[in-house]
Image (cartoon, rainbow, N blue to C red; front, side, top):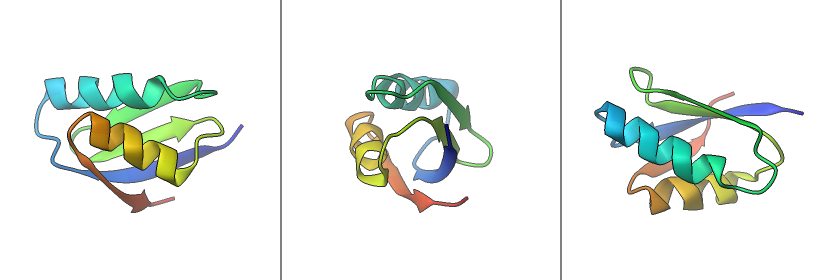
Length: 69
């Protein structure tokens, strides 16, 4: 399974990171989510598409700016 890292704008605290992790983690097939608050990224392991991740991040109240790796 592949892991893709996305840039996330707007995260400033632990609560932000938890919200993003919870929403992205709820996507079908996602097996791991790792939020890096300092780097403003979320690494997603599983078959989620970029648009799925962007929608989940938006649901949490933030903006995904595309894959960085």
